[in-house]
Length: 411
Ligand code: FE2
Image (tube, rainbow, N blue to C red):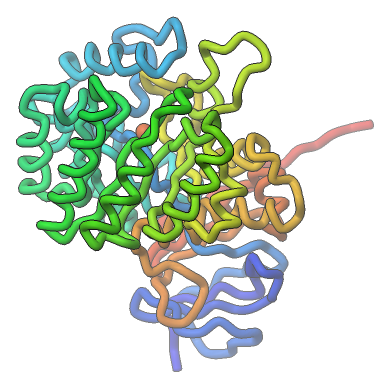
């Protein structure tokens, strides 16, 4: 028996030491002491090996644009949306593609092999959609890019937005998006949620809505999203992104809401870097953290993933494409510093987003031959140190290598 690639001696996230053999782009064996021949052997002795890092909430049409045409002075979500409105009139399709490709290279070097990006379909020139469809084609075979048809300016609030969503889906965009809390009224938000679910049901697609990204405890579109998910039979195909209003909601109401989310099998995507900087802006002290109720959702059996959301764009001046930074911030904001909780935070940027995106990743025979080798031994050290991803393998081929930094300190 001969394999295409064997990763020797790595430590899996659960602590087992095993060799991983890959043939024809798929994992063929995960066991200690594989002696078969392989075209390439990677020595990962004593190093953590995991399935790929995944970012299931991003905005690739805006990334790496920081400062163009100006910075977000207030730091708020609403100024960010206004600033994006200015930027999208200025940028060419070539600008979008160049920045997105640059970002994909950075993220891939950090072990990210799949990204779900929202793409603003309310750009009348449609170059955001055309640009990211081109990027999806260009990175195919190395990185997976799922695109969400996202009407940034509102489904009802922006004239022609529903038609733009349908045009984007017809052009090959994968998923139905929305932003119900940005509609003019709660009632309009509910109409927008229902419309998104109806279109997804008609076309057999998934739904991922920006939902309740506000500190308003009465922003309850997630309730409508869960109910419509059940009504349209979309269980397991729907995600609610952000859900930050849940942070501020009445506890009794949440005790009813979380079981409904679990029943509808709606996944929750928290974006801790962004939630901690955009929410609570209008508070004096104490200032709310604004991230959704991650431990409580996990305890109810809801699939919860962490997303990056933004890197150097109208909403966020920082970010590096590193999902370990995202999980690091997430576990701090959610107070998840217990040993099992930190391990869970690592799963929230690997296993959970693979589930959300429907990707066959994992370190078991039959899964895609994609993995990451880290310059550390455990998932908790990966979160603590955010070390070099020394080797990144995508569908059986090495796509990135990073040499660990060498420090010489003299005492
Ligand atoms: Fe977002």
